[in-house]
Image (cartoon, rainbow, N blue to C red; front, side, top):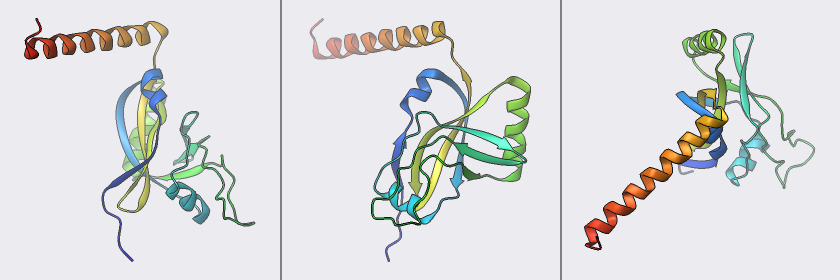
Amino acid sequence: MVKERGRKVISQNRKARHDWSVLDTYEAGIALTGTEVKSLRQGKAQLVDGFATVDDGEVWLRNVHIPEYTEGTWTNHEPRRSRKLLLHRHEIERLVGKIKESGLSLVPLSLYFSDGKAKVELALARGKKAHDKRRDIAKRDVEREIQREIGRARKGRR
């Protein structure tokens, strides 16, 4: 059997970077059942409403939708069950301290296979207010316009 190499993205949470300002990111493994892995290999998962919590020294990924495996039988998994995340103890302790002291949240940014193992990229994030979102959109529009002008200048149109 050939071992997988590299990184294969299954799902990304594009809305997360719009709604949250990302302060730090962590890579965590996920404890999955067999049918969940098979469903992920088909490229099906939704991270939109997902979040992570720390309960009794363990990190849990909640509200992430991994659909049932189509060829599965009675051993199929529940699509929105809580899944345990695999992190080192010192990472969990650091996360607990940051979450409690400053009101931050853990948000999944992407779900992917890294060398054949399912991983999730977690973000330590703070929620954005409406005016922060508008400012980010305006900044992105200005940068896009600057890049257009630079491109026009290089082509000699201006």
